[in-house]
Length: 319
Ligand SMILES: NC(=O)c1ccc[n+]([C@@H]2O[C@H](COP(=O)([O-])OP(=O)(O)OC[C@H]3O[C@@H](n4cnc5c(N)ncnc54)[C@H](OP(=O)(O)O)[C@@H]3O)[C@@H](O)[C@H]2O)c1
Ligand SMILES: *[C@@H]1O[C@H](CO)[C@@H](O)[C@H](O)[C@H]1NC(C)=O
Image: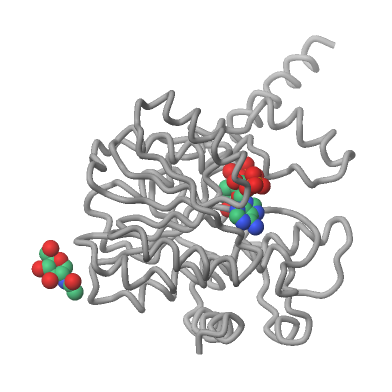
């Protein structure tokens, strides 16, 4: 009995240590760069990783614009952030990424009222079922297409800043994604059908778009002073799983208590890509745990990235 118990404990600890060193690994952004005089937009900055990111950037003196869809939640977040940091320069601006019209409206307001943009953080994201206002699959529409249009509309303003960056949240889940261009044309989504497990597929597909978008954007930004990065934040305890079913919750909640990063730890790689000096030559690359990582072939496929860009332009009415 005893050897069995010892073996069990050893295996359990081994698995725990392995997981903590891989999937649940953490790192800290060590840059001391200040943000005084700089303006930042963070989409979905009212909760989770976005709120933790906003808090640190406000602490460093940035003017922070929370681009959120819910005014009440945003105002509460601003009160929390200002209390914690002493900043008085955190603003709400309405942005619903599930509506291309609302994205255009946001950009118009921003360009009219704000004179500079140093950092755009495409952070908002969701795992859910449904369609956007324009009829796109909701994950494709919000996680990718809304951010695609937003970035395009703000690029000229980013180019005017002395050194600016676009940081886009992807996920390690992009590895399991697929891009089905035929489905996109016929079904306004990257796949067909949507039941239970399928919205996880749709999520992975949208996250692959985030990586490919960053890959292509970097090429288009060559010769400018704008650089871009994609980020896997780690596995973080946030509201991202709010739409999963009850039985999935039964599995997710205990594991999340044991292993998941808190939002502050989950914001470190975003902060690294936003702040770290000298990473400009790594524009277009993928980061995890405050370090650049290689991605699988499909996340840096030049032809697919370009095709996704061209199709996205068409879908947004930009071409
Ligand atoms: N948590 C993780 O383990 C993990 C892992 C890998 C990647 N990520 C990525 O990290 C990013 C942040 O996620 P999180 O974990 O912090 O999730 P979260 O706590 O659910 O926060 C997501 C944010 O996105 C906003 N949002 C959703 N739909 C929107 C829309 N249509 N328009 C504008 N904003 C919208 C939400 O606003 P409301 O509050 O109004 O809904 C919320 O502020 C996402 O891109 C996610 O894919 C997370
Ligand atoms: C980039 O920044 C450098 C130094 O700040 C400046 O000399 C140069 O003109 C900028 N380039 C562009 C394309 O704006």
